[in-house]
Length: 166
Image 1 (tube, rainbow, N blue to C red):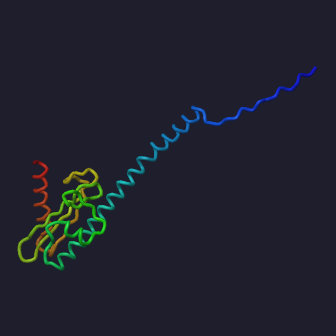
Image 2: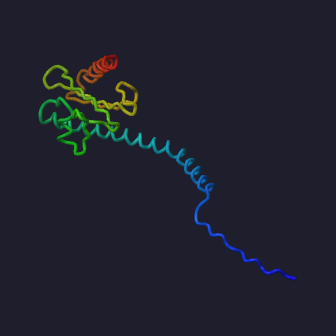
Image 3: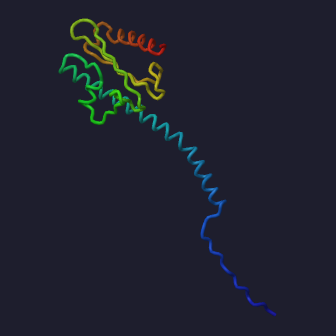
């Protein structure tokens, strides 16, 4: 005697189970943990490259300003407003680096007629001036004569040290 076949009712799945969702979330978390440090490293490198590029542009603009006016401007704002289209300023009208910290700009008279030098310093990723990750650019009129750059560097180091101690 044969039994009647039992009707098999097919169960329709309309959603994921909690276990499946948890497995997917764990996989996404592992991938994020592996990829995130590499992405942030690339972002830091991009900011450093951007800062170097901005400083190079500022240096070119400063030299252009010098060739027209015979002296360097007292602040970077004059240059940035005139030569840079997308310059970023804070509330005090200071030009900001990629980390949001104002660039440090110093002009020195080196004695004699038309002898000036300048230095632009970006604090770098740690946002502290005077550390090894700073990005600097120096220039000036007649720089090669008499070690003008060395004199500038020594006097600036003393000023930065005094500022950091205060």
